Amino acid sequence: MAKVPVQFRLNGSDRAAFADPADSLLTVLRRGLNDFGPKYGCGQGTCGTCSVLIDGGLRLACLTLAASCEGASIETVSGMADGPNLHPLQTAFMEHFAAQCGFCTPGMLTAAKALLDRNPNPSREDVIDAIAGNICRCTGYEPIIQAILAAARTLPAQRRS
Image (cartoon, rainbow, N blue to C red):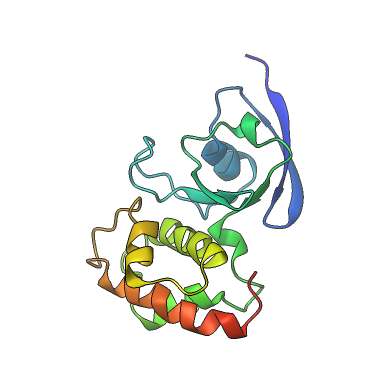
């Protein structure tokens, strides 16, 4: 099978890779572009650890064909920090002990960012709905919910990025 070129904007930088027509975005990100932020979990779209933002919408990279992302803007958890400066969500996850084993953390952070980008003042129920597609086996979800709500309280005073 012939590889096809795919070009998109990844975390603010123009990137290009060659992909098999059946390659998932997750495969291209991890193997082709060395972005190891999104994790490979279930490979079936049920765990959420591979979550990314594509043109601002939350998507599962394991179920998204790389070729369908031509010209898109893709954000991964790897692009959340600004150099050594963590995104407020990342800081809140640390302060609220929302990351234990860390396996779900990339997807949780990405889902939380998608929520706060569209709703800067979410309710507890909004947060629960936003992370419903992400499985965590360590925290019991309460520290994650509290971290997202805490980050939401700090974000209005800061520029969202």
